[in-house]
Amino acid sequence: MNQKLDLENLLGSHGSNLAATMRKGLQWLDDRSEPQLLRQVGQRVSDLPDFIPVTKHALQNSFGGNQTQAPDDLLVGRGLFYLTEQRRLCLDCTSGHYQMLWGYNHPDLCAAIAGAMQSGVVWDNHSNIPQAPAKQLAHQLVAVANSPDEPDPLDTVLLGVCTGSVACAAALKIQLKVYQRDRSSHGAPLIVVLDGNYHGTDMVPQFMRGLWPELVRHFEVIVLQPNDYEGLEQAFHRHGSRIAGFWAEPIMMNREAIALEADYLRQARHWCTETGALLCIDEIQTGFWLPEVFEFRALGIQPDLVVTGKGMTAGFHSLSAVLMKNRHDLLEQYDAISTNGLAALPSLVALASMELIRQNASSIRQIGSRIGRSFDALVQEFPDQLVSAQGRNYLSGLKFRSIDCALAFHRQALQAGLWCRVHAYHAGHSTLLTKLGLLANEVIVDYLVDQFRQLLKQTDASKTSHLKQAV
Ligand SMILES: Cc1ncc(COP(=O)(O)O)c(C=O)c1O
Image (tube, rainbow, N blue to C red; front, side):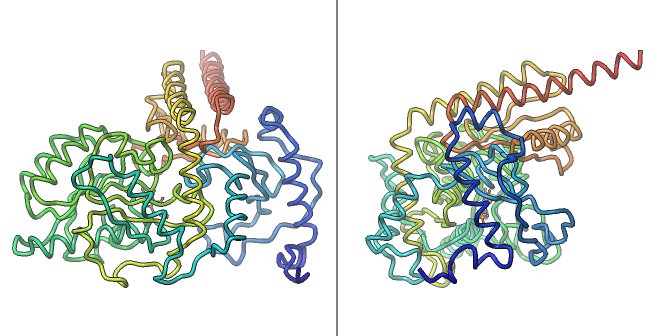
């Protein structure tokens, strides 16, 4: 191999120490059993050598570009565990930013990648001559999106998109194009969304969640509260055939993991059918985290459009898709693409990952419900601090009684080496979020819940001692 292409060289002036520590770090993770790793979560691994991390100064501020303290970013990861650059061991409880379905560098997926590359599969050929794995993924997505006897199947996949944001924008364009084709004489189209939605970072979907209020004109959005049946009925009664589309995430991971009820989505289906609106289910968060692959399948809903991404390629490389019915396939090639979006190798990872889901279906179901039950039990145990368990299965949350409590708990969890997220930055939001990878077993779930229990007990204890002091 060209020596100049070694990791040591490519990582710059401190690269040789850094690359050596990365290798040792990975070996350290590989040499330990799961119980050994769990015993050390949150601790600094002192037997790894010092090195100087690469600074973040050339990155944007929202990614820590203006950070003054020494970086403590990802050093290496394996499975559900990772080491930070300060050599702390963490348990990843949110699968990265919710996409690393099988954790870090799952050996079976890495082997599948290596094998496929040896057979000539390319990462991405960036053009409209897709290699076999991408085409096969489209077939597999169609297969899992429909029951075998579905009379009006989702039979077409727009697979030329890299990130979920582009896929969401594409689905919105489809709703608007179909409206233009079928009902343009009914007036300007309306889009119905749920309060707290997140359909990516494209400007118009951001407008659907209240951003750019002055800049996006001539585009009307109706915002409903999730699971508000009456509001849903009123909106459709009032606006009828002017509604071009309805959007919903089955579990709103960007709003405290609110889980939509199957009946609510069935009602939405009913109203969309009545008025001609296209029902779009955004499965970017929910997709691939359950044996049915899609939440809408588990809930028994028949959408017109499905957006998927994130977990589809298990976090190896982004790739997203829109599933639709062929009669709605109105976009031209350059209406909605990423030029980096016909990625054969990520598609191969998606196929391999779907096979792993099939092989592990019963444990995925079991662990999913164990998480739900355990979070419910925590709420029963700590009613002074917790209001409710949120979400469904792996996409789960704990809603705290106050924003401050949620933020404090999140800080403590991070200190304890439990990488999780919190929604407490909007009025009324006070929820800690977790989304364990599908590698999680009973031991991991029980460990996490027990760690949460200890942190909640500490808070209870410190409240009691404050009260005693006040008396
Ligand atoms: C529900 C939902 N839709 C869309 C997106 C956008 O996906 P991406 O970040 O891949 O652009 C996200 C990302 O978090 C999401 O959670």
